[in-house]
Length: 453
Image 1 (cartoon, rainbow, N blue to C red):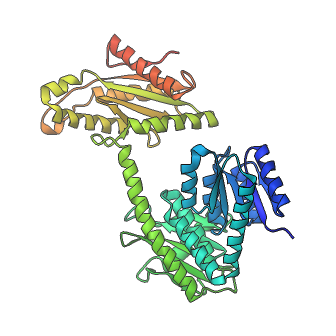
Image 2 (cartoon, rainbow, N blue to C red; image 1 turned 30 degrees about the vertical axis):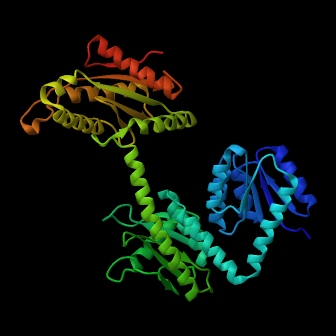
Image 3 (cartoon, rainbow, N blue to C red; image 1 turned 180 degrees about the vertical axis):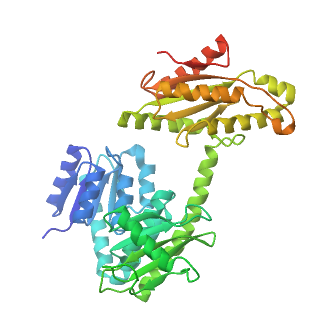
């Protein structure tokens, strides 16, 4: 009989064979995977006593495999393999629940000792039912508390509650903003989104609205308006002491939720509530990094990240992308004649004109001073020219700072460069759009100029 079942994940065939041979010789059953996605499919289907994964993989990295596997089963054991330069990242994996890490090139004896120790430790916990439950609750809580991303938060909390206290089916509904209605944010064990929405609507109408709305963890032995499901547990998640949403999990028919299950759900609810406050704070702070304080537009730091991502998306789906560079003509005269305070208010007005001239999916950026850029997604140069002409005319035809009894007139010069027509990378696209704008300024100002290769 094998000592245990181990999955080795590495994109290097040499490394996979090396680890597999050592472990088979030591009495383990071993399977291998070359990508993170393949590994997750195998973990979900087969289950393993231990996963040994390289940190760097061709699709998703080992730390992401670890986090997603913990959502499947919180007590999954992991050893991370890493090159010397990645030890800091490996330590982050330990914080996310890895049992240990090894540096490459591997020492065979050290490798065997660590694998044996990790599997033996897991067996000791599993043989003690009380410790096993505490370990699972601890791992689930750690998984929840480590999340700082909104979309992942909803799924992680749902997956955690499907593990502890447990369930076969579940969904999460949250308020996208204060004063709005609950919306479906995640679901599990339900084949279609439309079915999940219908189930969520039924539960919301019966238990999450009106004068008898649920405010604490509640067990419902036979939920109304839901067929084919067992007992229901509804778990509220709060932020700043106000309910932000709910997670609902169903046991299979014939099962029931115990007092211990409700206590565990309450504990996870508290952890989720604390985490949601952290998610709000983190994302607010992150937004501030990318927001221009004067105009409330995105700043150039955001552009440095957004533009490469949009180019990647355009390449992948064979789409167009256009970049506009916008410069307010002779803006220094505004500051000289009216002062910087009024000049700043005029720039804020210009920002509002730009935002109203494009779609919500387009990205308006204050590049610096009196220069702006706009990323027009899925837009070729012909479409960009129409939008640029509209922006130019809107700025020319507006009386700025008119509320104060002053009619300040402005004009703007715009340059356009498009992917893939003019450039295939961020730096070239930015350079060509900038050059096109300055070419227009040198010629006459108050014009739109399209780049040439």
